[in-house]
Image (cartoon, rainbow, N blue to C red; front, side):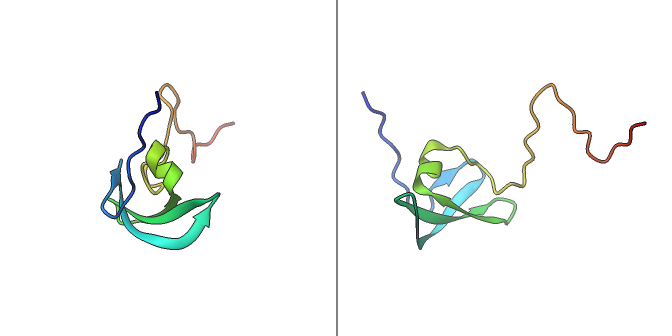
Length: 77
């Protein structure tokens, strides 16, 4: 059985992103869409990324894996 992929159109939401407009560009044969994040940022993603849900924000949310801590800005030694 093959899972049916959602149809991407203006207003489609994935995570914090909402599809705002279609661009004239293509990436690997897929249409590139301009998406607006809830934080106000913009990001361009292809249809495949939106259908799979691999990208859910414009980069505003930092991905820190559970069990790890952010050591940026700290001094050692």
